[in-house]
Length: 226
Ligand code: GRF
Image (cartoon, rainbow, N blue to C red; front, top):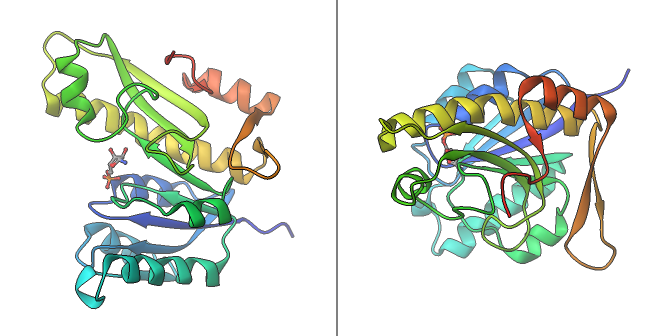
């Protein structure tokens, strides 16, 4: 019997993306949820969903931030998952860890990258009078929201939008896009050809992935960006 792809998810907060990922475990199985905040609500959601390993690594338990992150990395190494999903994990991942897991480490970001990397994306989308906004799932490299783009989902920005209304609409897109991408990666419908000797690579999509993305209104790679 073919085993499902083993996934570790890293969170820092409410974990609504985590909950969406948990609801759609078919091609993948979330074997562990790890947080850098002991009080992250997402940890409770993971326990309720029956995830086998749910652990908070609060900053207070460590003498430095680097020790805290080293403990998280060491746990992930011991689990050796097929994929690591960042879902609202508010820490920079060290380049050495990125290199070690390059091609297995993915993130969701609330903008149509490469537009609006970093924080406060909804506020900036309104300030910049963008007509279209959305979210991106990408492989993580050592830059800030710069890794190869896997897929994007978009929505129009309305005249009447506030930061909250826009955030709500984009979050709904995130909850559809992220589980689909994870399922497609787990099912090998999306692959990255990793460049030898460096962090980088080209994302490839199967016919099935292209057809499904079209049906769901997702764009593969970066089309909205520059
Ligand atoms: C999401 O908007 C995600 O794109 C960003 O952080 C937020 C996390 O929200 N990286 P949640 O914890 O999944 O609800």
